[in-house]
Amino acid sequence: MKKEYEMIREIFNNCSGNQMRDVDIRTVETDDVEEFVRIYLDDPEAVVERQVSRDGAVVFEVEKAGLRQRFSFTEA
Image 1 (cartoon, one colour):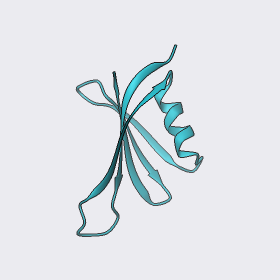
Image 2: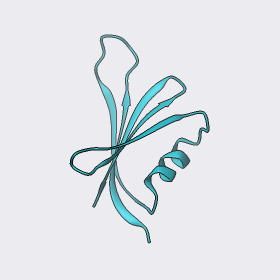
Image 3: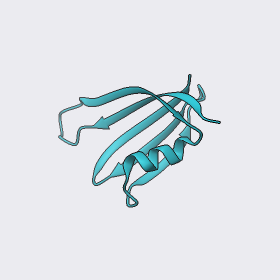
Image 4: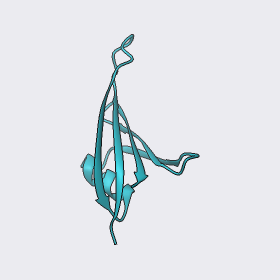
């Protein structure tokens, strides 16, 4: 059974001196958040590291093609 999550995707800027980042917030339905991230990235070379924060959110730190991203999932 699929669960509903709030997903926050952050894309970090590689330019030195620029601390801005792109942020995308959306609601997703999935029964496996890690599989969702891997399908979303569509890159078998991407490095994906899973963590669980103190508040229970599932967080994936991603390195894809030299670009750092973070996906955070909180159950809705």
